[in-house]
Image (cartoon, rainbow, N blue to C red):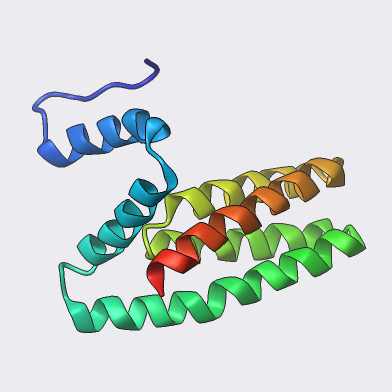
Length: 138
C-alpha cells in the first residue's frame, strides 16, 4: 500500500485512506451511493445547501465537458488546460474526486501540449465517470 496516516490518528483521515484503497473493489451502485453521501457530508447535512450545490454542479459540469470536447477537437491546449482546471475545481466543490482526478490528468497533459490522443482517451473516461455520478445526483 502506497499511503500513510500520521499520528495522532484522526478518524476522518483514516476513513479517507481506507476509502481510497477499499473503494477500488466496490461496484457501481455502491460508488453512486458513496458519491451522493460525500456531497451531503460536504454540506454538513444541510439539505438546502446540498440541493443548491447539486443543481449548480448538474448545470456547470456538463458545460465544462462540452468545452473540453470542443478544445480537444481543435487541439487547443491552452483552453484545454484552463477548462480542465475549472472542471477539477467544480468537481472538488461537490466532493466528486473521480471526475476531479480525471480533469486533473487532462490539465497536466494539456500543459505538456504533446499528446491529444491520451487526452481523448481520458475525456471518454471522464464522460463515463460523469454519467455515473450525474445519475446518482439527480
